[in-house]
Picture 1 (cartoon, helix red, strand yellow):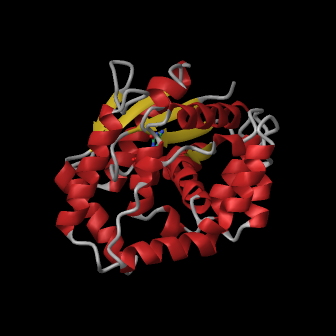
Picture 2 (cartoon, helix red, strand yellow):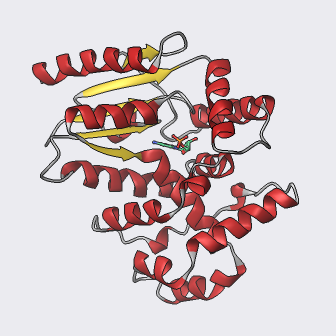
Amino acid sequence: MKPIIAIDGPAASGKGTMARMLAEHFRFAYLDSGSLYRAFACIELVLSDKSAVSLNDKAEKEENHNLHLADLSEDYDFTHILSDTLKEAEKNKKKIDFSSYTAHTKFFSEDTSGAREFISIAKKIPDNILKSEIVGTGASTVGKLPEVRALLTSLMREFASSPGDKYLGTVIDGRDIGSVVFPNATCKIFLTADLKVRAERRFKDTKNFGDTSATFESIYETLRSRDERDASRSIAPMTYDETHIVVDTSNISIKEAFNKLVNIIDLRLHNA
Ligand code: DC
């Protein structure tokens, strides 16, 4: 098995930025596990759309035969349904009730061949939808469902078992990567920062994306409640133990955090 670097931490702690930079530096593949949970929330949104009823019927009838995931992306204009649903919610200031989700795990084949398909679906969803805070909240809510966690955990393990010839290992970021998905990862990091600092960084990002509707206070509150949900769920809560190295980035720059992590990982890779 090629080495695995697990990076966990709360929302907007900079895990994604660090993980991407580290993957490039070490010539590792990068897997953003949050985007898998986010994609799952998006799929649930699409399936809860009225126009997806026929697909749901089809799944009921073929209960014992998993529907091929490709059916989903072929039959439905994902982006269209998603952006309409989100626009509608925004226009009416309507909260999407992700808590009523039932997890359509039957759409996913149990065998591991589903991993690449799922990842390719996640990649098809435009970033402004996938990375939106509303989809983040949805991901955090569907992430409480045991069947969703089991499915995505097996997809991640499959991915890291063969990241591709050109990669020397895998960097994965999330909430439970070092604690549950890869407890024996070569290096386990818990990246964190003060909630206020994280909210300020996210606020700046949303403004840079051209989103002027979110206020600092609303972002602060959304991150706070997402962290609370992620840390308090009964299965695979966000946590760390003495096998993780905790890095607090509240008072350091991206460059300083990166250099610090490179040193830590270098040491681990040489001693592995
Ligand atoms: O890292 P992120 O903000 O993109 O993750 C979005 C949500 O997905 C997060 O609030 C909780 C869920 N998630 C999870 O439960 N487990 C993971 N390993 C990654 C994300």
